[in-house]
Image: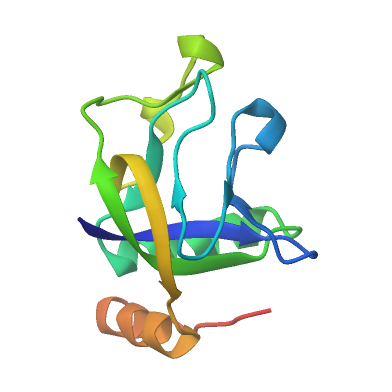
Length: 134
């Protein structure tokens, strides 16, 4: 299926889960390669539409200045699960999922969504919004 993945682009160029550190079950994504949940964790989160992905990315950057969010078009395999967990189920976080989240057993980043495209999507939904990128 087609969706949108929000990732944190690290200073060294790595693309990581945007809210969960790799030592706690977050994963590192690679352009064009299939990524699966870390052991004892699952599933991965993607967005069904660009608008919700953009709003989420902007909110994260506004609250955590060290983050550098990027949005990618992605292919994903839908998960049979309807919850997200870490640490073999000890840390369930489904109540924290933002609107538009879809759960995935695997994700492949296809190409980066341009700032222009994100800006256009935001302006359609929020006419007074001004897109700003670091």
